[in-house]
Length: 402
Image 1 (cartoon, helix red, strand yellow):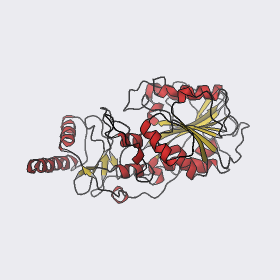
Image 2 (image 1 turned 180 degrees about the vertical axis):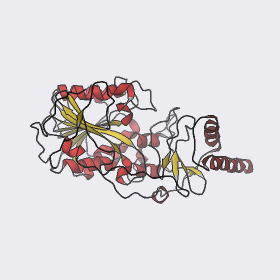
Image 3 (image 1 turned 90 degrees about the horizontal axis):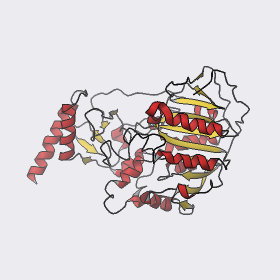
């Protein structure tokens, strides 16, 4: 991965302010990166997205922006200062096929790299799941950084948690910023607030994956676990919440949108008909990029940060696991001692954040979760399984009364 030679602080790469940037969004989804960068002072000029529901959302919210439906059909990168690509994560996530960076979905990033061979945007911004750092011993990040280095890019990446921005969703995603002419490190790595953890206590709501329960749970205290486009068993679903009153419920889609930093109702136009319609808005929300993270990056790119100090950064050794933050150029890679929280915004209680009534977890869903939880090796906080049993009894009595 890396070499032992120390790198100079800037390596001759400029840290000058970029001010307002034009943005081309590939794999745009429902526009999380583009909305965030827009709030950070930048302007989207091109979008590309294949999903019909996501296209409908983009057409509604970006009515004047050219929208293409297939990145494979592009023969060049649209003229823009920044190219953003939240490329498909299905092959890189724990909930997906884990086929790796060369899988049929995540391998689409190759098209982006091919387009960059003959283009020279000021910035490249990539986003994907943090599991890519571990899958197949980090082969995806090794491949991306090698190819970017070959094309003359300096790069920096960082795992960033949505919770740092005041949203009660534990969502860790890799953001990689690269440039041929500028040093990406100050923009992505200079700020660090340190992660805050919340210990479970009675009276605090907790989120969990009701589709799991045997080996995994996704447990989140005073937050929901990562909103996902699909579960490990292929169900499009929102996480469940154990409320302080003992009930189990599923958040409303409008709160799901808000948990990603969108306005409530953002995906209304994304509802589709047919056999795949159920849960499609949740799929769109789960696959989106959290808006405030992109907004923070946008503000960073519009400023002139101080030079990055690499003091203490060490080379990433060959065969070593990729760290949560790193940077490199010219075939070298270095670990950066940075947390997943670049900032620390005020954290609302999950119950205070939610604005819409939750839907009770169904009898069938509760039965399945409880069966897996009781048969599996997981340990749970005191009172949780008892609350699940009580909820199941109540749901059964409702069904019986009906």
